[in-house]
Image (cartoon, rainbow, N blue to C red; front, side):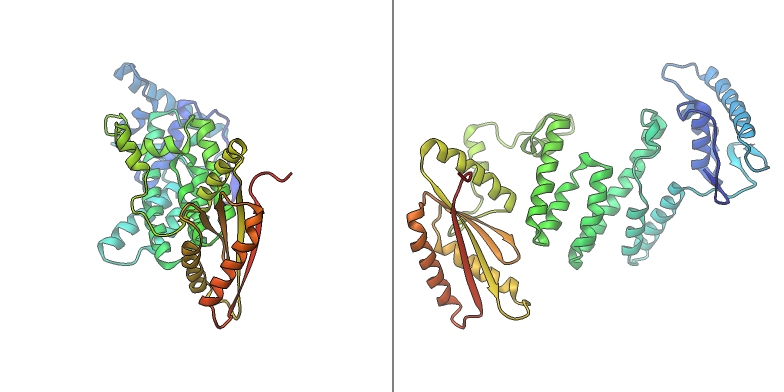
Length: 379
């Protein structure tokens, strides 16, 4: 608590009911709290309702004593004006939750009036700092308030991210979702982080977020990313709703929904998984594979980079075999895993790809650079 820029200290544990009543009254602010709301703070499961009313008066007495001993500014505290209780009427009370409540109301009013809410959504998301009174997260009244503000935060953040995605503002989206994943690590905002990083062609950073999240979920929850995904299909009774109980149905779900022409294109994290599996398999079978880095250097200002890279992607899809795998690695690079290929094949592969690309880029506006190495650990 601060008063005129000075910190006010109270000698008491937050777990004490008198201190919790203080927090509830501060949260209520100028609107005050009803007696029932304060009873919910001091209530204990299985307690006698009549005794709880007596306990409330006792805890309020202790709170007044605590305020007196803590050298608060002069004034009247713990004011009772039935049916409401107020912390004080001598000074204005401002809190972070009060500001969130104001912004939330402004958002609702703006939406009803058909006005733009972008800046208000920004204010709410940046004003939210996490769980309500985390040191009391075992108290029922605190859990209820915490869930209330968390729901509002997720609603605002989802809508804000949707708007920012339409605007192409991936950096701001990334910053917001990075904070969200730190505040609420179990709510999978890491997935939006990865989407933002991929959209900005930051594939290594996306992989790092993916691996850290997978490790976190496994260590804390004992589930893999696959189990985490399956867990989304829980029905209202909490039982798993399996997409298919038969092996044939499972296999169908694993197959490509639409078989596309050419080599297999996947995300960078998926490419890493495929590569590691292939390396393990070749240790057993002895059948090698090649890892190729394709760099397309584009002349000029680079404003047509994406156009050229899409042409090159289509070229690669048709120039390597169906069983090969490739992915976008950087703004001007692709990684290719050439299955069942050996070092003796490198020269022919490079010549075929370079000649094929020259047929597409006849004006010579780009330069294709290929680097090939056998897959697996360096010996």
